[in-house]
Amino acid sequence: MNQNIAIIGAGISGLSVARNLVEGNNIILFDKSRGVGGRMSTRYSEAYEFDHGAQYFTAKDKRFKAFLSSKISEDVIKPWESRAFYKKDNKLIPDTGEFRYVSQPRMNSFAKKLSKDLNIRLNSKVSSIYRDLKKWVVETSDGKAYKNFDIVILALPNQQALSLMPPETSYFDEVQKTQMDPCFALMVGFKKKYDFGWDSLRLNNNINSWLAVNSSKPGRSDDLTTLVIHSEVEWSKKNKSSDKSWIQNQMASAASKTCGIDISRAHHKVIHRWMFASVSKSSSKGCFYDHSLNIATCGDWCNGGRVEGAYISGLMAANIIKEKF
Ligand SMILES: Cc1cc2nc3c(=O)[nH]c(=O)nc-3n(C[C@H](O)[C@H](O)[C@H](O)COP(=O)(O)OP(=O)(O)OC[C@H]3O[C@@H](n4cnc5c(N)ncnc54)[C@H](O)[C@@H]3O)c2cc1C
Image (tube, rainbow, N blue to C red; front, side, top):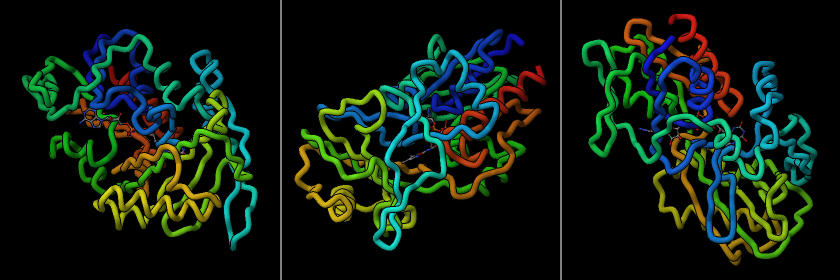
């Protein structure tokens, strides 16, 4: 193939497309963050670590299952055999619908392994992309321009992809029809161990929708307690621009009632806002490719949302490109 390829975004979809194209091509990945993994990431805060985005993932698609059983997943992927419940009418009901996998010792370990030996520019926010004599130019917000790419791949949440995509891209309108919603993650650390009787809890509460004992996942320190609490979608949409300390207090107060302890007295608390967390209107295309501009777009929102969807979306984009060149 021998193509020069720029991939914007080093989350799971960007890493998937890169791994599946790396042989025989020259690839550069750009990511605005300090590390790889995107929403499947880990926040380090004082003595604590929190998987504040993706909590676990499923493996239903046979292509993803095959990938998980390959050498690359060895050591880093483990089942999370948790005490999982959901709450209905004030009763705890076992939440046994899905087999859950996590990456260990932290959620970003998987992305780190996937990124091994790839040419990745971190702390590089792409501010624009354009064509010059039929080749793509990628400009980063520090004023640098990277030239001469045959193909550009946007592996970003939908709105972030739209902000870079030329309006004449053949699938621009289809991307506009998709929707992603925000979510707040409250991370709480206690120096001592607590047993709430569950490791994860899905709620029908109008503030919080999910609580997980992060320290119960395999490979994490279990001499302390870390909790990750996610806000409910409609509440998050309504309050997405609200003051973060107000958000933190509201979520902590609701979680205190759920856990039976005063969360506001925890040793450590930190809040994070995900502007594009989950997919409420997905495309059914899997990924997009414009054959005349040679621009591809992939990500979880092209394929039903979630980690598994993101990986397959990247794989599908790679397969289209392999077929064409
Ligand atoms: C709170 C929360 C809970 C979740 N829970 C689960 C779960 O339990 N199970 C599950 O399967 N999934 C879950 N998900 C969804 C899962 O995390 C995603 O489906 C998956 O990680 C998406 O990967 P991606 O590569 O499509 O996008 P992302 O991970 O968003 O990757 C996009 C990358 O692009 C980078 N970027 C953005 N703009 C630019 C730019 N201009 N220039 C350079 N880089 C840029 C970002 O830094 C990021 O690294 C959750 C997500 C969140 C936020």
